[in-house]
Length: 114
Image (cartoon, rainbow, N blue to C red):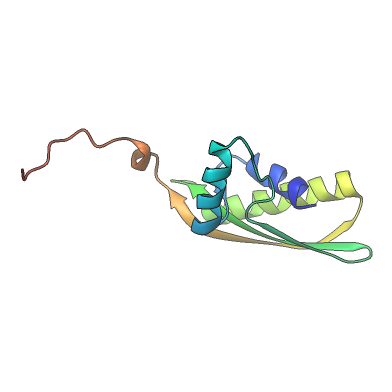
């Protein structure tokens, strides 16, 4: 069930990654060795007929965070309902970080001190 929720959440525009810092660090190591954890950052509680999910995401800057959380809730609810056929009682979304694309670029500027 975590995989279904993870795939749905990753497909929402504005989601950079799933999980908090520690989970992303472990995920980076998995990617290097050729494995991927599609349930990273996802916690799901399953009852007899209902499901509740907690999702931790890293958002892309400058996406509106409340809109992003709403779109994630909708995508995860739809995916679990369609794929698993269970009612989703709640989807809690936590934005653990905001990714700024310029942070990925190497800083080519000269240091002021040598």
